[in-house]
Length: 72
Image (cartoon, rainbow, N blue to C red):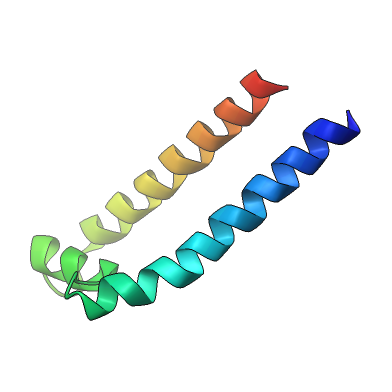
């Protein structure tokens, strides 16, 4: 049990570090940010951009939860 918990914490730390280091790199390469993409897709102030964002966040959250649940 301790080993699984340590692996999950290590996975979280590595993922967090890769995002912190990867996002500035993507920005310097010219990849647009999330809000620029949502504004281009849905327009300024559109409620569907918020709905789309919430659905993506829920999808990722439940997907990660399912992977963690299946690995324990």
